[in-house]
Each structure stands twice: as structure tokens, then as C-alpha cells.
Amino acid sequence: MASFYIIPKLNYYKPRTLKEALALINSLQNFKLIAGGTDLVVDLKTGRIKVESIIDISSLNELQYIKINEKEIKIGAATILQEICENKALREEIPALTEAIESMGSWHVRNIATIGGNLCNASPAADTAPPLLILNAKLKLESIQGKRIVPIEKFFHGPRQTELKKNEILTEIVIPKPPKNTGMNFLKLGRRNAFTLSVVGVATLVSVKNRVFKDVRIALNAIAPTPIRAYKTESALKKQKVDLKIIEEKVKIVTEEIKPISDVRASAKYRKEMAIVLTRDSIIQSLRRIGLILEEKA
Ligand SMILES: Cc1cc2nc3c(=O)[nH]c(=O)nc-3n(C[C@H](O)[C@H](O)[C@H](O)COP(=O)(O)OP(=O)(O)OC[C@H]3O[C@@H](n4cnc5c(N)ncnc54)[C@H](O)[C@@H]3O)c2cc1C
Image (cartoon, rainbow, N blue to C red; front, side):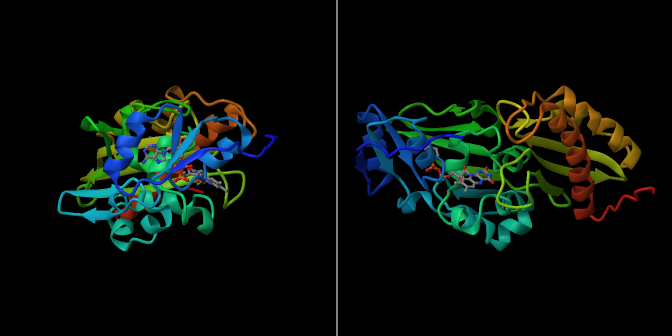
């Protein structure tokens, strides 16, 4: 069990604009950004993170929005999870993200925690990562020098390590709209049914033509140092007939792509077994979303 202690005195900054925030992080040294604080405050209290200053970006309106146009969905990094979860258009367009967020924490946590905080904290179990990975999301990183766009699969470098430079803020998540007739889904296995971190989480996306897989995308969390795409398993399924036996055979490949550890939540062996089961179930659910119901034989 982690022991908690009183957070030492910190300098607290609350910039009024993104420009002010970017200037501040460019000039300060030993600091952390804080959005909802649902990860950071725990880290400060356990002493895992020690800093002199915190910069509060939770009130920056410039980072709080959901915009949808014909091609893309754009979500401001400081948008709270509950707002994303309640957005009907997002539920329709990209249900895997809605389902992942619904599985996170409690209503109270989701009302303060942000999507950007979940990604930048870079936990291997971050639940917004698998759906954003299958959606080929891109992340906009900004500093006073300018902006750069990074594909989400290049963003995670390791547990709590990301592509962000010291003077950069994640400002926006850009999600290309998936083609019509695409089915997607997120499934999470935790130690309880609710209010729990992933033992394994899987997001899948499928599209099918003449009962053959045209596209298959699979992403998992809590089974490697970072959330991952399972490209080998995807390739094995592409161009295959949509058939339960074939799916069950091919999803076993996922164990070659993951490197789970044993920890307080589950053993590595259990995670491997569950990664197969959840990948299979998630594909079946995604197929169901496009009207393909597979018969399970008794
Ligand atoms: C009770 C409880 C239950 C939880 N359940 C889940 C769960 O089921 N699934 C799950 O994935 N997580 C869960 N979490 C973890 C946490 O709530 C999420 O990761 C949340 O989305 C973090 O967002 P935040 O805004 O609170 O981040 P913060 O704590 O404010 O920040 C987290 C980190 O990201 C950095 N950061 C934040 N925003 C930015 C930005 N825009 N640019 C650059 N850096 C930034 C901060 O400096 C910090 O290092 C839970 C936490 C609690 C306390």
C-alpha cells in the first residue's frame, strides 16, 4: 500500500490563456501541469512526483470543446470525460471511445478528469488509449515555438513517458471519422464490474465486404508498458472469411504481440488468456454493430 503525506508548499499558477500557459512552461523548470488532478494529486501525495510549481490548465476554455465536421472530430485536451461520454454525436460516430470512458472511474471522477490528462499520464492501463489507437487519432502538441501533430501510436514511450517535450502541452485530439459501415467496440475486464482499472482492455474496429474482413483494427491496454495496436493479429484476420472458428484461431496470435506483467491486479498468464477472450468478444460485438451476428455453437 502506498503511504500518503501532506503535499509540500507549491507555487500555484493559473494562466488565463493558452498563450500565457505556454510562456509559463517555457520559463519554469521544476513544474507539472494539472488538469483534473485525478492522477497528479495522487502522485504528489505519495511523493512519486515532487515539483516546485503546478500550472492549472483546467479552466482554459481554449482547450475545452468537441467539434465535429464532415471529416474529423476534434476534442480539446482539457475536455472533461463526462462531457465526452454524454455527447450523443460521439456515441453515434465513435462508440468505442464513449464505452471506454463510461468504464472509467465514477461519475465524480469523470466530471473532473480530462481526456488529455488520461493520455499524458501515460499509464499502461489508460482506457482512452485503445479506442483512440483503433481510430488512428492524432495529437496536437503545442509550445511557444509552434505546433506539431503526432500519431497516437508514436505518443507513448513507456509507463508515464510520452513524446511531450518539457515545454509542450497536448492541446487537441484529432480523430478522422471512420468510414460508414464500420463497427467498433471497447471491452474492459477489471477486478470488479465498475470503478476499476483495466486488467485488460480491448478496442476493435471492423469493416466487412461480402462476408470477408476488409479492415480489422485491434488495440489493447494493461498488457505491455504502453497501450498497443495488435498489427500482427489484425493482418491475420484481414481478407479472412467472417467466421467464428477463424476468428477464434487468429485472435490467439495476440499473445505474441503483448508483454503483460504480473501485478496486484492480475498475473501475466491470466492477462494473456483474457487478452485472447476479450479480443474475440470485442470483434464479435463490433460485427454485431454492422448487423453481422455470429452463431455460437453450444
Ligand atoms: C478513483 C479513480 C478512478 C480512476 N479510474 C480510471 C479508469 O477506470 N481508467 C483510467 O484510464 N484511469 C482512471 N483513473 C485515472 C485518472 O482519472 C485518468 O487518467 C484521468 O483522465 C486523468 O485526467 P486528469 O485531468 O485528472 O489528469 P491530471 O491528474 O491533471 O494530469 C495527469 C498527468 O497529465 C499531465 N497533463 C494533463 N493534461 C495535460 C495536457 N493537456 N498537456 C500535457 N500534459 C498534461 C499532468 O501534468 C500529469 O502529469 C482513475 C483515477 C481515480 C482517482
